[in-house]
Length: 287
Image (tube, rainbow, N blue to C red):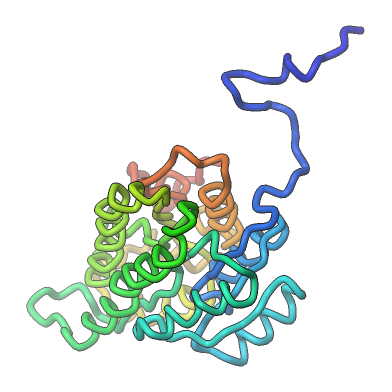
């Protein structure tokens, strides 16, 4: 029997051995829109990997319940991300409570009203509301995080975009515009932030089994003739492999927030089972 030395498990600087270390040990994070769905799942993964997390939302009941469920390393704070002052307050809370901010995850978003697939009747009040909560709030989060991270020349900023920002979906046309804008913000901000030693990346999930998406499916189906039968099936059927759990996205966030991604910035990490490259909705996801 041949023994395996630690050196033999290293290839190109990366260990192939299983590791039980906490990838975010000692880190402090703020996650917006974290009372449920992707934000809550990400908070759970961050805490499991050693981070302390400020979770924010506008749903106080869900937010307090989520913090209680996540345990002593989670703190809930109300934050309407459309108001930059509240975003700044969440950042300041992290610094006041834990001494610094290492990771800012701009995750909060709204889907907007339906229908959205008629460009001759765009609802600009709804579009402006989406722009305020989706891309504008991401930029506010970048600004406020950079304010406290830049003096330390250390920090990671994440923004939740969407696969529909990469491959627009007619049923959510105006929402797709707001998510594509988040990707553009991340790319534009990467070099200016790098001057201060900071990284910024986007995560673009495909269809994720969250309360927000599942609650909107019937409305989307009824109001959007462009929503295909295959897409309805992809979203409606719980067992369908094309619909991920939020934990899949959370694990991508852990990677980008960790030192393992120290050379990754300005990137949009698509987590969609290959949907945008492009496959049919009824094709099993690549796993």
